[in-house]
Every structure is written in structure tokens, then in C-alpha cells.
Image (cartoon, rainbow, N blue to C red; front, side, top):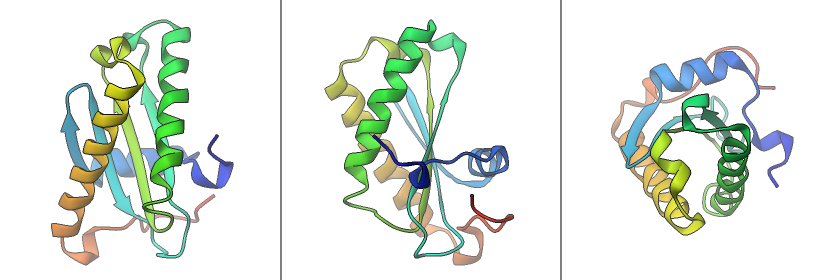
Length: 130
């Protein structure tokens, strides 16, 4: 389970990440990543799963699975990163292994894109982190 400190809860942070973060698309997922304004801040994750993906049971299962995958990723990137997963309808039929593979590939690809950006464009510089 992801602790609250590792979750994105602010709508402003979601909007910023989706609009300005480094984006990487893999089959069934789009991952947006930005560096936190403070490099020592904990890595945070957010999840966007629309009703087009399926009924509440399916959406919640996907969210729980992505939280478990994100918890695993915390060992690799414990500080300084904000990640948002946008789930597309085809992901509803995936097994946990397929979802893990695509999520890891998406985060890795987005981080590589982020590292190629100039440093002044990489981070969330809006308001306080909550």
C-alpha cells in the first residue's frame, strides 16, 4: 500500500504533470513524469482511470495493482519524482504481469525523456506540496 506521502492529491499537481510533464506512451498506458521541486521530496504517484476503462470494480482493481507496482518502484526511485499513470480501456483485460511490464516500461521511458530536457523545465514549481 502506498502511504499518503507517496500519493499525488492536488488537482493542480495532476494538471501540471499531464500538461507539462515528460510523457511516454506504452500500449494501454500513458505515463507523465516531472521532477519534484525539492530533490529530497518523496516520490509521488497519481492515477487517472476514467469510466471508459470499465465499471468501478475494474477501475479499482487497476488502481490497486498500479499502487502495488508503484510501491515496488519506490525502491529504485525513492526521492524527487512525480509520476501520473493514465490508464486506457485496453488495460482492463491485462494480467498483473502485463500491467507491471507496461508500467515499468512507461516510467522508464518517461524518465529518460525527462533527463533529456533542460533542467529549468523539469520540475513542478507550483505551490506547496501536500
